[in-house]
Length: 529
Image 1 (cartoon, rainbow, N blue to C red):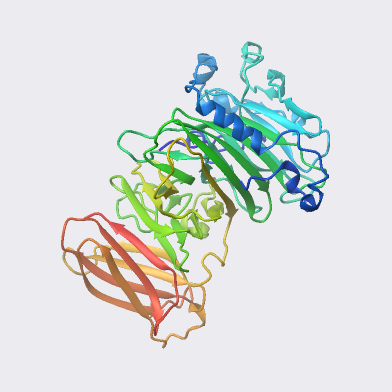
Image 2 (image 1 turned 60 degrees about the vertical axis):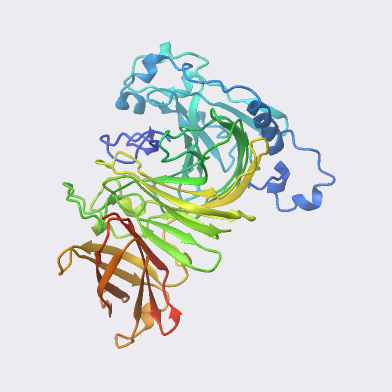
């Protein structure tokens, strides 16, 4: 997997690739409608309205044409001396806010840009779409404050940008907050009103966790649609390229309490791709309450996300706690037409992190809602071992069971919701925490799973609940179990011990039941004896 670019603000208000301290060195990282369809009355006016000067269809045609040509490697366009900058040198280069795109027009959205260099070796072309047509956004070193660096005069005048970030008054009407970042490969990150930057989304995942290695596509060109004075959405088109494919993307970005990014994509392959990951999310998990390995760190937990949540068309919700495994783990949840999936930061208690700088309890969750029928496939979870919280080692995405021949395009549309806590996901009881140890029996493992939410808090302690524990794969012996009221959380605790009886991987599932009625989501856990 790749490493993500993390962007926030430092004390001077400039871009910082990671919201962690300088020891963090994290690498960078939509329905097919006409431009006027963003307005509420666009449908009624479509017949009389003039054709937009530029739209998604034009990006699709550009991607289709490029797919018939050999891939051109874009590296080498950034001078090597810029790539040799230290992290602190690159971080000291800040875009001047007074030069932000649309600032002088007093529009609700403004755009600032990132300087190429360090890890960002592929400049991207950026254009504006407005009533006059297309205009390039030209690069100039004068747009940047180079801080303590003394090489501004040596920067090529036509260098180009590494990416951009979009600002919108999401918290107060008087300040344009940074709400979404496009920087590095095909990565993008967003926040809702009350979060700080954390996990990332990507345009596409290609051959992730396969022996031959992953292919990383990149957004090579962007078109920013100038918003109306009272707009609450901003549309961005993007062209994606890689050796194996090209693609057209449309992002409709609506910041708010829960920032929503509607995505449409059309993909053209040059050859057969072994594994295509749709709507990929990437995050970091270093240590959590379920980690048995000893980690020497003052922080009890360190992660940007602590679980994978999946909503099946059957109505079942599945919660898979994340972990930092000792070896690569790839899990799949086979579904037809999933209702949603996402990497979730469910633990919102500062006491569990004790990190005043990263504020992990404020990291957003990202929830993908498919549009239309996605057919058969699987939500795949990839967990990569890591010895440091520097690395993003978690990925989740949709893998279609079958794709048309490479000569035919592939289209997917979905929405990504960036948010904090949401009782609707899932609507019933949910897992609060997962803990484990070696139990009280030789060669056994003990699991302690706390559930809360839904109807659980209303049930008195004398209520009889049953833990339904099943072995989905592998071989193991269930030794005992009990379900008890947790007077601290108001929820219920499931405790059980099990002993592996073979060497194959084990898949466990459990939920709480009253009579014949399930009260909670399904807890899912993988073990590698």
